Length: 618
Image (cartoon, rainbow, N blue to C red; front, top):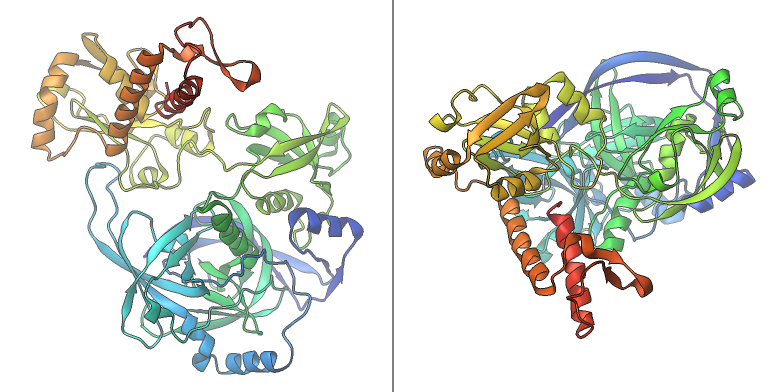
């Protein structure tokens, strides 16, 4: 399986470089704050910047990784010594026969994806292959784009030189970092194999070897190169800006997810993607990102994702801009926007200048080792944290310095990059098919420029907000005149602004008016007779072979609604009554029906009501 995305960027080439390593006091503090060993360096040789354009190809493959549960330090203090080093170097000298290559396996995925335009249907079955490697404890590591959760009907792995395929299970999948964790229950699969050892972040010009199972054969293949750059990049799905290693070794389709080794036989990263150009440019997920992924899964028993501040930033390079916001030249980053769903909205304001992150200065060229751009450095510092962690921000507001504490959480996307479920949500009303906008749907259908811009640049105003789309109109006499409509955002139903697909389903079910009035973007309007629409719906479902007028997740929401109404009736509590009073006990404003007896049960019921109110987005 191979997906492609177009990227435009600058590549930096240089002559043979010499590096000077140092560790200042403030850098040691940065290492302590981020739980990562950091070593700064300064490039002494001249650099030449070359602008180039091309297509970034992501190849489907799987890989596995070894971890001891500890965070991976940025640089090794010492290299392997003695007999261990000689054995590793001997193995690398004859890589094709090296024993540790038995830990690298080939992955076979049988996939059937949903049709996002007609969400009750599935697309044709297809197969893909990739690479993976063992990390111990019965687990394998690979790229997330190699194993699509809930769309894989079967995942199998095969060891080198063995024709037996073993069934694997997807334990965790991090789309933002393009990593996935697999498990194999069969004890036979693990016999006689040692898991790979997780190495450290490499230096520039270090020799590396990419190993995997590229397309075109069943045997293991390796390509060699050197590390050419280490910087923060947007990964394939574009969900996060994380540290990435650039190498000049080819990463072919099928290599993705395989390990990348240094000269000491340590795995320094996971093959990610390649850049199609006259020169080979490959991308590797470094061990710092891999360790973060594994630790996140271990701490939370599931993967929560990399956190963010939920703000938009601007560099302060112009002297007049710095003078206007009363900061020193090249000091800090300007906050130009704060996302409504971010905790930072209670602390930061547009016009604030962030000058430090956990006492690490932002704007200094040496603030973060091996990253020269302060904007990238800021994203790197955030990526070292976990969801729920707090950070201390140094802020300049109207010329005055202040410090405040902010909790980091994953970003809430208005348009999700992927659908983490068996079936996309949908709702059929009189042949009109409504579904939430997602990146897979956006990439497969034609939408207006305005809607594409909204999907790319707009932020969610509240959690669970969705852009609800009229995907198709299934022709029937009840919807005559609307058959040409499609791929348009529905904004209101009977004058009420729509929050998400569940909210639309709730509004339609409660409607007692004669007409169903839908208002779309660009002032389009569709009006249906409610009784005629209700009568025609069963015939439309039968004619088009649709099993239900709505997806299972919307049916579940209606079950929650009935539970909510039952609780409300029993305790005579309305949504407006749920407020917090003294001693953390909910105060029921204007409601005297809740008596003091069985208060514990009532408190649990009120908590359940609050949860249900959130789920059905009332």
